[in-house]
Image (cartoon, rainbow, N blue to C red; front, side, top):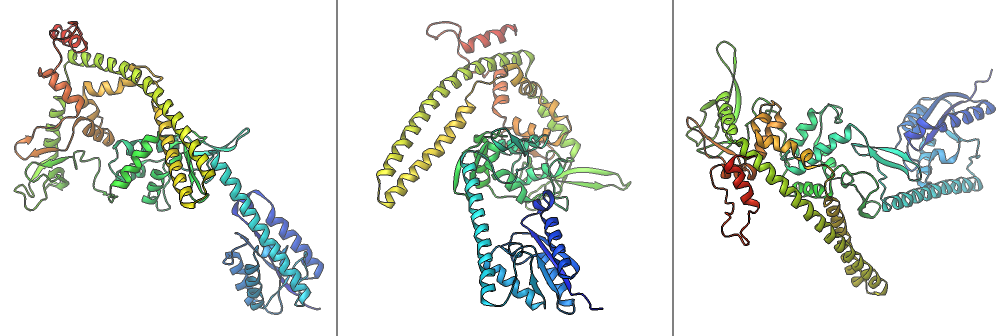
Length: 529
């Protein structure tokens, strides 16, 4: 009995998505298997790839070539169509040579391969047509993506905190992906406000967050952090340098304001990334914030094990030139004195009520100011649009390339200013919530910051440090804390409580009426608040 000729089947689709969602590979395998049965071949193996046809380096192709070199006789490689082997003339010829070098020939139910000039001409023409289709499809895809970005739609893979959702009449759009959107928003706003001093602090926060995606080794790398901080999509804008589309407002919901995004970029461009330090943890909340009063260097921290294997927590100065070098301070002592210092910031009940009324008046004044600011910004937006229209007319009339480039540069700057103005307009809207709802948390903190400190949450404690004090605290071993520089709200409250309020007296006012400052002075004096 004559031994049948051995054959292998090679199938290819362009992407993994086609493998999951379509039957392209199955259809190719079925057609090639029918062809092999018709020719009387014995199919010994099937190889597949899910990569672009322009590539030569493919895992499935490599495995097939290695397999062919081990087969004896004159094996056959069966493909469904020329385009399944490659979508480029150079790639097609390279793979044809590789298959021939492996001792196999190429056959297909769609075309008859041969060595005569006519057969080669047809084969090369089909390969060229396949290449043209690939390039044309790529160009059309790029054009569609470019137009979509120009219309304000994001087209890349959905960033963390978003997901794609089909919207009637608008196609696939980014929408908030909760609870991940809230995590991304907290991270971005925290970095913009200074809650996270550098990317290392933000990385530590996200590393500990169970919802933020980690790499394979359960580690959040700085590349992921940088990608999160640099994308304008989180501010509600889209852009694409690869598609030659400048930044413009997007149609999706923003997680942060454009002003916060700009602050993030300024911080990233003006600071050096510091490495993550594993020894900064919940055990030493004051580490990095309290400095030695003699050398002005931050105190370090450590755990020490006593003779009975009991652990003790200490702060200590490790500056060799300092007289306090190596001398430890019990953590309970330093943090206990800090709590005593913090408790002194709480204002009296009468002063707190007066401050609340002051803030309410300031809130109302700010609301009126925002309304006026919004009107001015609308006027500025009209001016910018008029200038852009003028410059566009000049571009049409200009013929010198340098002049055209200069005008286009001015238009680009005006467009950037327009984005900033629109963002300011969105931030100039009068808050929808009432003063009581907005200020409740801030007022509770002003009333007694010690309550937030005692929450035992490291982020809360660092928030207290940043909101209550202007700079790092100085601590002298054996003496305690030196005079602290308070942040503006607590400084104002202390100045008022010590009679340094600077409020105007009734005499001297024109006309002599009880003004803004006098109303609160009188109320404080009589304790009627």
